[in-house]
Image 1 (cartoon, rainbow, N blue to C red):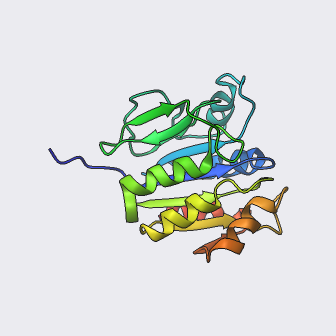
Image 2: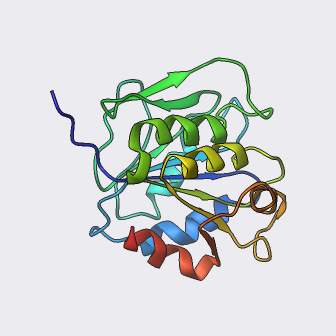
Length: 188
């Protein structure tokens, strides 16, 4: 059986990235046919308030990812607190409670790498503001597997360490100012 997978964008971020998402999501319209996965570092006891908050700013449907959800075009999936988010070859999602990676669960690296294995060149990854190294290794692996990679311009990031670190370990395809992100996403 051949599975038709949607083009997919994974956005990862930590400290300072929520405001970027709250400004980006309203600019994406229904013509956006990407499956968008958001992996944000947050406290492990958070409930689904993040997806509810993001849904108030998006015309695209936003939901907290659940076990066995199948990625669909034009949908936004938010990694739940305290679980790594993996993608299966059939485009379904798996929640994983294994060890933290880069002190984080969900880990951006874990989802970037899992998505790269499934989507290859049908994947784009965007790394936003944050204060640790999570995301850089996954971004590099994704690029090696054909994905388009981008980081938030560290000069505009509330916490520049995360995108800046990615730029020290690899040559990212794009460094995006916040005002450029929506056009970039819609062009994917």
